[in-house]
Length: 75
Image 1 (cartoon, helix red, strand yellow):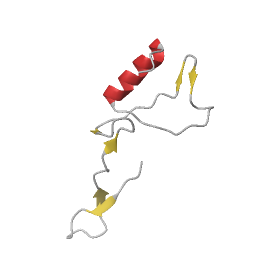
Image 2 (tube, one colour):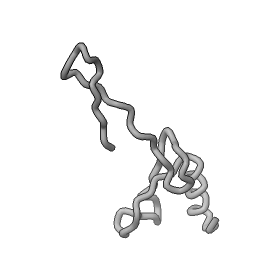
Image 3 (cartoon, helix red, strand yellow):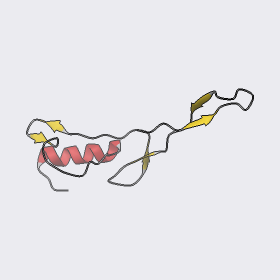
Image 4 (cartoon, helix red, strand yellow):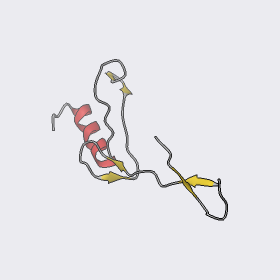
């Protein structure tokens, strides 16, 4: 993740602080999230060896996706 720097105080030139990072966005529902998840390895599940688009999910989408993966339910 990229850190954006900004001038903290015009009276203290050269002193910077991290600017707020851009919001995280779920690749599945498109909503902003405070955290995102990516499951890459689990028993009988390996997304590190197979070429694919890396996607990150909010908590709700991650839990729903994991439930579908574990039960074999396509959705």
